[in-house]
Image: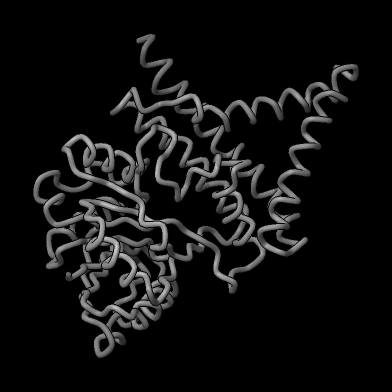
Length: 324
């Protein structure tokens, strides 16, 4: 079984060096690596070239079109039986490909995904962000689970694989961003292919290194959910409204404290319970009071940034469009 690892890259040479270093340590070695530089002004050509003696690696530079179309560019040139796509901010455990190969032999899949985790070397903020993206108190704990909110498993593009047959029949990404991975997964499902989670095929996902960057990313994710809905209206589920509801709850709590003091204690009580649940849950998982404290901020950013992005495009693309 031969794998083609495809990595889109945009102005992140340091990240690709760390990722490629982890690929040199893979216990299963039947793979090639395709780095697709998507119009970067700060390219990684020399860094990729330094791995020529360690990896079967290929470097391509193309005009900037976004990550979805950069992956398509890689698909067109890949030789593998399976194509695996990683984000450039991932670190890959040494047994990743071994675990994928074994799973596919024992339980064949046409497309697959795996979970993400925080590496011990990550900063406290990165670990807090990882908690916020995987906790039952924020995302419902559905990331890295066999079924997502819509009842089907939708691999995410930071850690996603598909067979060459899927590429030949379904094609590639038709969106370059704003939920492109979920849209692609839905089309793979609709084409009758089998998609599944490989639980032990996890990656260490750095995500963002500051809360400001994290806010921008999650605001984008909220907008992406509505973008997917414009293609597949039935995929919008009640659970997708939770961040927006939480955001409205925070606004109402603030207003209650400013103008309706009689109601404030009730809202403050429920908010305090929620904060304590996040703190102690994160502490139990990360074994760090500092990370647990930062997890409160990360969780609130995760929910409110997504909530505002969701409400923004829900109004623009669904409400206003229906009125026109």
